[in-house]
Every structure is written in C-alpha cells, then in structure tokens.
Length: 207
Image 1 (cartoon, rainbow, N blue to C red):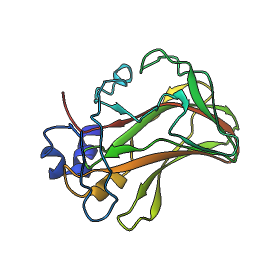
Image 2 (image 1 turned 135 degrees about the vertical axis):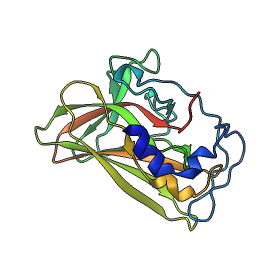
Image 3 (image 1 turned 45 degrees about the vertical axis):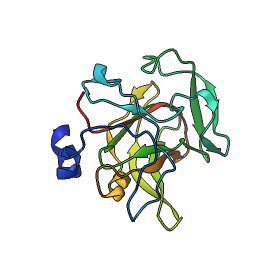
Image 4 (image 1 turned 120 degrees about the vertical axis):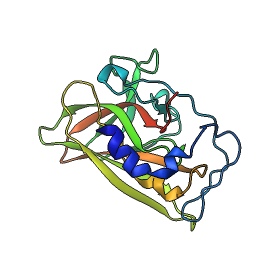
C-alpha cells in the first residue's frame, strides 16, 4: 500500500531518477529557491525492523549528537540526554526536548521530487491530550519563507518511530534533478512536552 500512494505522488518523475549523487550545485526550477550546493547523501534501511525497507537519509545532525548545531530552537526547547533506544544511526545519547510553547526547526536538507516522505522517533513526556505537529519549511524563488503543515502525531510515553509522512513541499521542485533546501518544524499542540530524535527523509530509490 505504501508503494502505491508513493508512486501516485511521484508519478512518472520519480521513475526518471537514476542517481542521488547531489554533490555540487543544483537547480530548483522556478518555484523554490535553489541551494548553493547539495552534499552527497548516504542511505540506510534504518526502519527495516518496523517493516519499512525503504532507504533513508538522515537530516544533517538529525540525531542531535552535535548539540543544537544547525537547529533553530524556540522557547525552552533544548538538546537533552536521552536517545531513542534502538540507536538506528549508531551510538548516540541525545535528543531534542520540546515543551509546550516551544518548537524545534531542523537543519536544512536538499530534497527533490524523489524525496517523498519523512520519519523520525518521538515520545511524549507529558500532556494527555497533547499532539506533535510537524511542518515543512521552504523558501520560494521570491525569497519568501513558507511553512506547510503535513502531520500530527499522537504518540505515547515510550519512544516509537513515527509513520512515514508525505510532506509534499518537495514536489514544488517540479522535475527530477532539481533540488531545494527543506527544514522540518516540530511543535507540541494542546500543551505537553515531547522529545524527538533521528529525523530521516526517504529518497525514492532502490539500492
């Protein structure tokens, strides 16, 4: 089922992509801002233990092992001790804690039409009715910053992988081989206190 809706979202464009070597400069077309450069992305099947054998690339410092480097934290959001227990990206000891009234905006990642979904690990420390809102931030070719909400996580008191969310902003690049920088914001709703760790995006590619 996952493959059906993913292919529907990407259409013919995704099948035209033959490589994810993004080193050097890249074009983003007419709707979104072009990145100065896109480093090559390494891939791993980090969600295979949960039945998802897609290949994922981690958002830069997506595991918070370099402190808040690259992240934009508002309110009382902060990097704390406490890693998701499976350590899918290797030895780790940190995550970002996001209390009510704060948010955490990830470092930017180059994405294109072949980067359809995002997954991460999260747990809720407090707030019976609290949920976690997730949005994608992108810059248009006119220099405007736009945020596109795409998911709400209910979560629980134990670490769990999120569903694979379609965030759709990647489709604004229009064509394969065109890229732009995307950031992801995590914001508690209805109070509560959350932790997020190991943020990954799925490039549509089979190895």
